[in-house]
Picture (cartoon, rainbow, N blue to C red):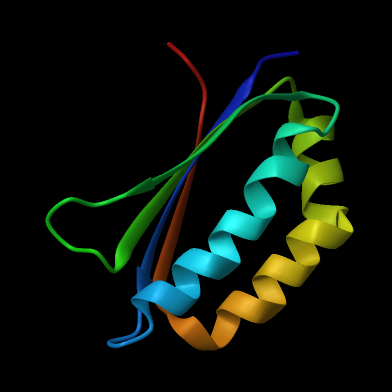
Length: 95
């Protein structure tokens, strides 16, 4: 099976940048510790402090699905929902 590369671009609602950042930080360490996680990085735009990007590499699709079903991922999605203006997720493979 191929690795699955995910880039998720999230933009906070105006005035919610710091709150969103705190929520996003909470999901990083537990995600990195998941079986099948090869890379899990959170980035913040230098030009727009309300734009955050997750860059993830997972061993396979099973690992991605396990991540989505994890309690820390579900908590992050619930807590971040009211803070996010836009969310774009790109699922990719290395070519």
